[in-house]
Image (cartoon, rainbow, N blue to C red; front, side, top):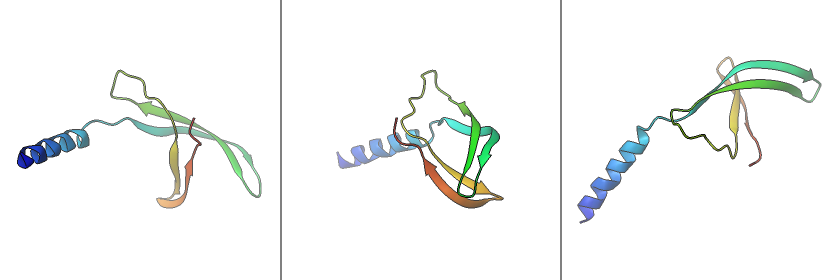
Length: 79
């Protein structure tokens, strides 16, 4: 019985791992304001959703990189 459960668990894990996932990419960035302590910008984001159901957005996490170098990690508060 334990062997059957282990096989079922591995099957489900493999299927979930191979499921297509929604992806997002920044398509345009406009700088709005720059000061000594901050930068304000407007980013347009394109989302590719492989499913017919809409994606609920609860929180957005993103990182900022320049020339392949990690600069910072950001997150919006949960909606």
